[in-house]
Image (tube, rainbow, N blue to C red; front, side, top):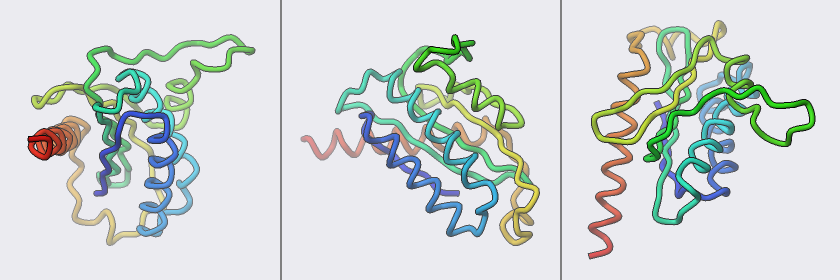
Length: 164
């Protein structure tokens, strides 16, 4: 499992893409690289937009194996729930969650106890090397959402303490 906490600015999207690509390369899971990078990019873009691109706000992204699947999980503090839109052919945005739905086995939203929301997508990884998935229990998105929200809460607490 790898995770990254980012400032909710547009630059976070590029960093999330780099993070996802680096993680997959380090795990030797390059067959799914393009799909995972695209899903991470779309989910982080939505999280940054939902938080209003404010320097004091954070988003977090986590990549996690569960059996033969990889979860891309993105946390933000915004209250709204994302919805897949059916954009017109000439629209310049609004296709992100449709792309996620097309690439993922399933996707959804969780509300962790620590606050905010986690939007997750499960991507199949049939070619995952056995050592990466052998002893990983197939824990669902609620498990990952709680972990990611706890990390984001700790990050916010550290930032507040540093400001004192």
